[in-house]
Structure formats: structure tokens, C-alpha cells
Image (cartoon, rainbow, N blue to C red):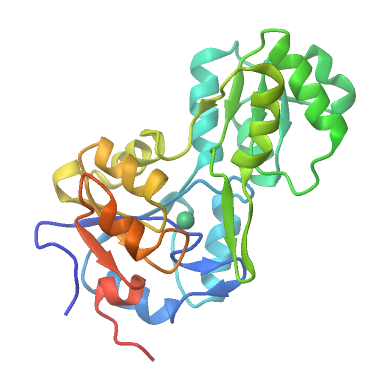
Length: 267
Ligand SMILES: [Mg+2]
């Protein structure tokens, strides 16, 4: 018995708060994914988390006994680079406040990465979560944006779920630069449509047969609804049942966790 609507053939799954909290899996992922794969659903993971590359995410899944191909992971770093390709000259130097997932995506799109010492000459600021953020990086980023350079964000999630509770997400750090410049970033992450569009393209899916699954109403659910997909909120992460019930338009499915959504009985 699962809670997935009958017309659904493809799942676009969020990761943080749905599959795991930091290094802790939520439920038995190996069993959950066997069930999903045996049922024949197309699967894409679409994450606002910009820190890691698709290869790193598939390796993490492998450690939990789940086999997924790197093309099945769409990250906000990949999405932001698509937007930069439309807006910047090829090979432009950019200043990035972010981690490996973002840096790799920028380099593989042919852009140059400016160090903090070269930041003044960069053509754009792109920002995701950076667990080594410091005053100098924020200062250089602020000066670029105040100087009129384009400001891109991988996502604007204010918080990030961990086993100890919510900690500051990319959006909290980005808000420092927004405060200092009065400029809002161009946001590639959910609720913007880019991750979902990339995901559906890779699956050859349509919005009529795709279910968007996530733990956060204002990103996963709002974004899924905006592009016309059915949505499922999972209660193992950020948003609560009360918030989900009050959300309009209504969320199509609310499940305790991913196991309940796909019909794997609790351990
Ligand atoms: Mg999440």
C-alpha cells in the first residue's frame, strides 16, 4: 500500500530532510529504493544543496545500499551554472562563495574561478553554502554586487536540517549580502523551476505524470505546484504537519516519511 497517486510514473525527490539528515539516513534507504525501483518509477534527486557533486551524492547513496547513476542527481550548482551560461561571456572569471559542488560545476561550464585576492576583477558573484565562509569573502562579494556585477544564488533556503536541529542555510548567509547591497540574487534553486525542468528533461517526463517530493513547503512544494506537478510533503524534515495542512493550494499527499509514501512498512 503506497500513497503515490495512480497517474504518477516519475518521482523527483529532494534529499536533505527526505533521504537523510546530514550523515544519518531516514528509514532504511536500501529497502525504500528497492521498492521504488521494483515499482518502475523514473527517479531524479533534485537538491538545493550545492556543496557536493552528483558523483559525491551517488557515493553517499551507495554507502546506504542504494545504486543511482550520477545523471539522476540534479543539483542547484548545475542549475545556477545554466543561468550563468545565459548571462555571462564564455570563460568569464567569477567569484564563488561555495564548496566543491559549486566550484566543479563552474569550472566544467568553462568559467574561471577567481580567488578571494582576484575577486575585484570577477564578472559575477555566485553564492551557495560555504562552511568556510568568512568576513573577507562576504566583503568581496558585497563589493562586486555594489559595483553592479550579477549576483547568482544556488538557493535561498534559510535553514538546513541536521540531527541536532536547523542550522543556517545558504539563504541566511546570502541575506547578509542582500542587506548590505539591497540587491536580491538570481536564484537557481527551488522554488525556481530550473531543477525540476532539468530533472523532467532527463527522465523524458511530463508534469502530468511527475510527483515532486520534499520536506519544505516554500521550496519543494511551492516549486512543484508552480510548474503544475502533483506534490508530496514528507514530514521527516523542515515543515510540520500543521504548516502542511494550512498550505494553499493544498499539498496532494502528506506522508510521515519516504517509507510511508512508497509503502515500505516501518522497521
Ligand atoms: Mg529538503
